[in-house]
Length: 125
Image (cartoon, rainbow, N blue to C red; front, side):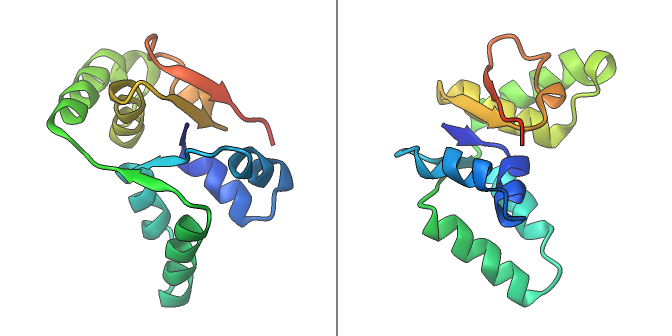
């Protein structure tokens, strides 16, 4: 399963339900976009290291940005930016899940619900 940035933030804030969701999954993935969002949110070098350690300790594999993901993300922005306020980052995360035929776990379903071919698991903290 691919995890959206929001679920990882819930874990970092101490939400046990979010942590259990991730811990029980043997194959944990992040889009490179989610990983960059986590790193970008770091307030200082210590927090930056914490994010990197967190991703490593939970055993996440980072899925790269590919040409196909980029093309699909562009299509999503073209199709959904005006009607559903699809942002570039969410389009990349959605495209990563679809291109890898994986379910995306997210606590922000409104960001992704427009994408019909996306398998979405909604997490409620």
